[in-house]
View 1 (cartoon, protein in one colour):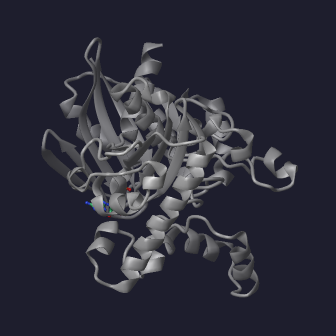
View 2 (view 1 turned 45 degrees about the horizontal axis):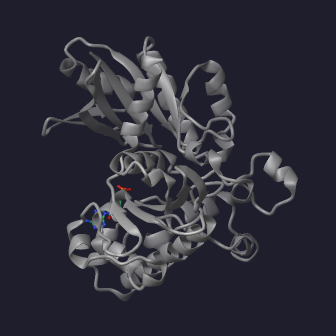
Length: 387
Ligand code: AMP
């Protein structure tokens, strides 16, 4: 019996899951939790296990202290069995990785060189790797990349129409949410072994949101590009934006890099449009015009991308909703599918309201699947341990 830990590090939070693995028994989720307010003087640690919740005040904590504290809270439940492997969610694998990789110092240096491509996420991901390497020196450390799933995209969806030198310098459409798409395509394979041959669009609608066109199990096109800002509007991120707007912001509004970055990442999307909240539940509950308009824009962009992604794979046979909004909001699913009979999408209102596995009655199979990025990471570690 061994344990596998998955870590998903953000700037001020570190989410973790603990899996038990035994020969013949597969992976069993034993606990989940997170450390919040990393970098402040009042970080907290939560552990959820067998229906119970334990929490601790950590005081001042960086990622290294957070990893130690996770070990301290989990160890008593591990009956002396070791943490044999740790899987890390790493936002950027650049062009280097199209699958998970066992991490070593050379790979860490290569990943560090990608920091300029994801300055808000990659440094925290790598801090967690370093912390885990020092707290668990005997464990296998595996990096799982959000970009990896999209490395199969053809050149036309990998590039921008900039002078070629920029493509060669790495200014490409990498795509993100790859762990979620990996899980969903795996689930389609499991539920219906023929499905991976189908033309599928997956809508990952969470606080971050993107859509991906999958054909033959491989990513062909996605809505996120060079960064996780492009495509759909999100909780606080803008989604697709005419680059001329940025020129205007600089020239006419006198905005600098940091102001523009904060605007695009933290003040736009559902929050910016509504002026109320980035939380879809609050917008759905609101009677204010701005909330309705924010939802209208959100739905409009999803529908527009659905058309474009369908064209990229030459048709549509399966549409999957996942992510917090995709999994839970019958309202958004209903609005996205409304009037889409021309594309073969028809859904049953009762099945949609119930969040059934299949909610469609028309030619296109419309599924609701709860995504599980942590399990994708744990499986990659399990595979590395078995290799
Ligand atoms: P995620 O980032 O995947 O955890 O998704 C977070 C988003 O899912 C937030 O906008 C939540 O408001 C939204 N969400 C979660 N549950 C519901 C629900 N029952 N109805 C509408 N939105 C929901």
